[in-house]
Length: 484
Image 1: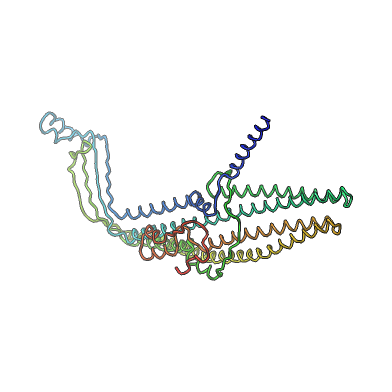
Image 2: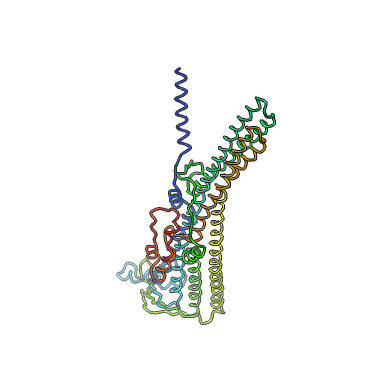
């Protein structure tokens, strides 16, 4: 009795530990998306790209300010040129005039200059414009990365729900065949059916068990894929807190396309790339014009590090102008180079619009196709289950064959798989359509562009375009702000 109780206790502990390990972490769809937005590498990389663009703008802005330079040289000198100077030093040695006659063994020079650009022919101004547009594009690229990760997390989450449902389908198939095998075995033992029916049912059961093993493996793979998107160890056990379901999407294709053309962050970012290329062309044209700087400079040369006993210190204040009157066509070639880059950016922007249109249309067609398949497969499941029940009854009564029962059972599995696959395709298609439309995650791209056009800085534009969902769930079609 003591050994029996100890075994029961050990089994209970093992079962509880196994259950805990299997659950690991329970996530809703919103929680999965929020975790992905926090940990995903794509967002991390896009954030650093945005930081680089921001510091580039800061560097360009600072280049129009004051520049202070200090240069120093320390030299050991000699030669006949200095003989007379050294003789004067020796004659004055030990006299009050010694300090006026340095030894000329060393020569240390210090030069300082302070300059401010007054006119650069438009170079600095256009460089600032280009860097500002680059930062705007980086902001929108970061939002596009968020939307991409949101879609990836949703699709991976739905895939887990699908694979979980397919595992249940295969479990039910095994249970049905085990029950059918029990009936076949009983009838064989009383001599009403042939042994071939028993063998055929066993083979069918073995195939179903193999399909169940494959479905369980696919489920584990789906969990690993979601872990990768969420930034978790791939062996983390995740349990879903919801079931895959159907919620009708009532927007028209024209509505979706209209929203996408005005809200897709990568589409607006492509337009900023064109502006950036235009600014680069204008900056290159500054080579045709002069440059003017205000300059203050001074220097001192002496025997010691900060002395001026070799020559008297001197300073100057003024304006300097430089102009490449003739540079053998270098500026002209550079301008043409940037014009070509500008035309390419415009072509890329048009291509992006075409890609958005295609992506929205494809996603919308896939969504509506999956919606029709849900209705079709749901009806097919009911008919297949009814057919299987009838075939079982007829077989037990001896008026039907075991082959028909097996075929009916296969149809039940097939239609159930088709139903859950249609549900998965619909939910994934909805997430894909909202990604194609550019439904905001953190900022509304249209509001950002409007704020920037009104003269707001990138940071102010981000504040104006901030979206507060309260969660990261996929927006309901009714909540999509078409009027903005």
